[in-house]
Amino acid sequence: QVQLVESGGGLVQAGGSLRLSCAASGSISSIRNMGWYRQAPGKQRELAALWSRGGYTNYKDSVKGRFTISRDNAKNTVYLQMDSLKPEDTAVYYCYVAGRDPDKGWGDYWGQGTQVTVSS
Image (cartoon, rainbow, N blue to C red; front, side):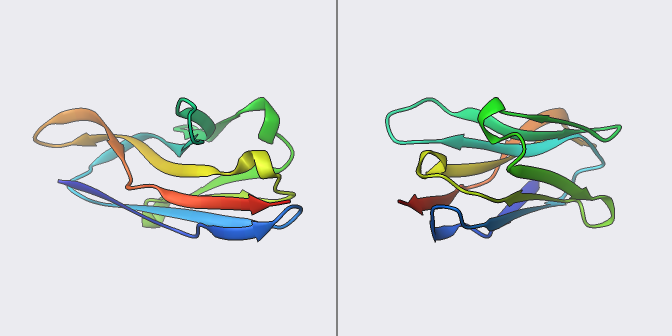
């Protein structure tokens, strides 16, 4: 089984910073993508930032220049540095991994979610 352990959410004032981390462990032999989706109350889950094999990154337009995604390959961990946070960034942030289980093949895996709240 693949496990994703997230940390780093919390409450911060507008203009502040938070750093999320997500570590993938278990029976995962290869990773194609690691990233973060977010879901605000009453809204659909949306991509915030994504790292892809080869070092490519993709960001939601509204977070470009404020969020930075990075990955520690040795630790199978992805980080999301969030700066200049705005109240509209308030959401539950979910870690996402597209990875390969040697027995099951490629699959999509999700973390349990971590709350990020930005006060105005």
